[in-house]
Image 1 (cartoon, helix red, strand yellow):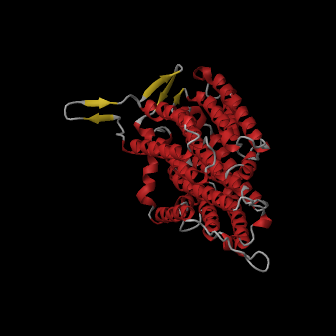
Image 2 (cartoon, rainbow, N blue to C red):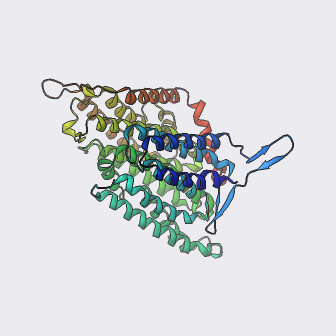
Image 3 (cartoon, rainbow, N blue to C red):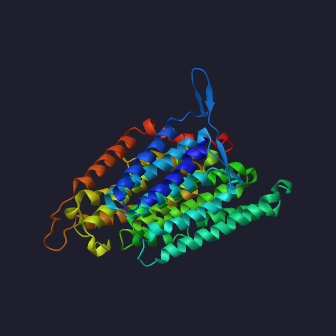
Length: 471
């Protein structure tokens, strides 16, 4: 028994069992939620030294496993990140039990999560590029269900992820003899450019972002929010792996500056683009782009102490994504003909009051609005940016203000009556949709009021990156 066996091999094997039960969605959902909850609890309570002390003996659990001649290692310090990834899967599978996104949702979500854990654990970690390509391919059945025409955004997603795979593998080949290369060699500069370019393709950085709003518009909201949430969370931490392992990369003066400006551009662009959108579902793609920009901004401030705020952004951000996906899925379930075009949003509050407010709350939370869970971390990031890179602050402010304008425009559409008389939804909002929203509001409010209770545990995500945390 080893940690990779527990959190990678066994979940993939269990997903195979779930695939056989795809015709029994209720049983499959229950088994997935129970199994995933067990993985989350086990990761949280597992001893950090991976040793169980019994009265007469000490049992140590190996942290590594060799798979296909590659070592996969999950140390005790990595278990908080493992718990977060499986907690995301647990939360979204609870949603799938209500909305029934796909008969393959349970099995594929578990496999994809296990693969993301492998991405963060494989040694040498450049081989993670192959796993990320596999994740992209496994995402296709969730983003484009059977019988549905393949969307252009999905094709762009696959193309960009494949290009990123080629660039990262080529970078690995270039770095095979890096130990014998002088620090001032042009080879290191070329390798760093290719590496960052590959990451830009992975994360959908500007101008490689177009597929995000497109799949947000055409695919199931719950599936999109899960896949993009997992990808953003895992890749934010995976970038730290490169910076921690390669001293020449983190010591290049242009690296942090490039990451900072890329993040600022994404924040500004996403806000401007959101104001031009005519479809509500496309807003989620731009919110993802904005949050990726904040992740890059936090990483760029590593020498000034920005990493703790990156770690504490992850959990509140995921809750906002879930709230968004749940609300849009709820509206689509109650009103299957809903197009989410701007002309059909008038009076949405009068028809679906709590669901429409959930959309606005999730957007305001991601924007960093006061009394919402992302405000404390973003406030500190804004202050840190103002102290160390004041030239970027006007662009951050512009991005935030124009995104707020887009949110206020949606609010105005939601509350204005449609025509002369509003026709409320006769079925109302069922309890199975309302209760989870109320519980999520309570959790988000508690996290905003007392972030010191939960969020410090997220700092354990940074423990494996010993070189970065020395700053």
